[in-house]
Length: 257
Image (tube, rainbow, N blue to C red; front, side):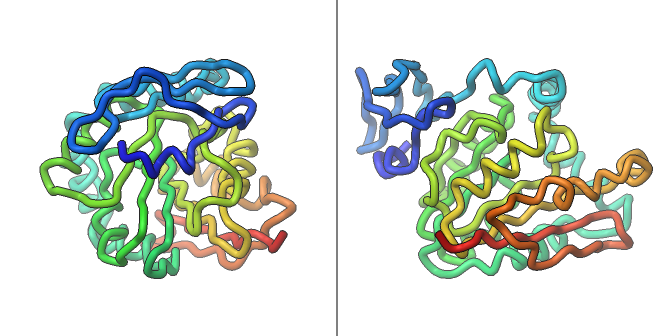
């Protein structure tokens, strides 16, 4: 964790300013210590360079179940997901390039990916010369796999945070582009998650939501979630079904202040 990430972080509950306590460094990066909220005194540990910003409010039934599943799934996620996509009939590479292209990323943009998983989209962000990429996930094991990949591939300007979509530990209006990838149907509170994603997006910035549609999700019309919970301070720019309607992508733009 580089010190620059501290400029983006805040308390996920009260949104108060944080201060560092008993931090340790290796090669100019923070590896351990604590973040203390100056307003409500909540304490968040930093372990292996990853700030743990999870709070009890994160753990509704769906979020708790998702965390358990993805903690178990993390070590085999990459090869299994690639095979599943090929079985459905489309390439993972083409899918991720399509998603990232919809974000209209510019040089020096700051990107947040909610549900970053093992970081499969990050190489596509890096090709676009982002100033900073922040990946957040509720699963500690998924973040662990992403961190291992980041070190192995020597990713630059990538920061990882353990946290949940409904209580984002970031200040308002700090990211140029925000992506919620492949999980919004399984959030405990998707309405709050979308509101939080727009909150941390800069005015005129973009929020992109994509989701794979299984038979169950099609029957339950979960593709309507982005429209049902559209924030009042954002406008819908586009809504597309792709890959034989197995994927949807919704793009919102935050209104000016």
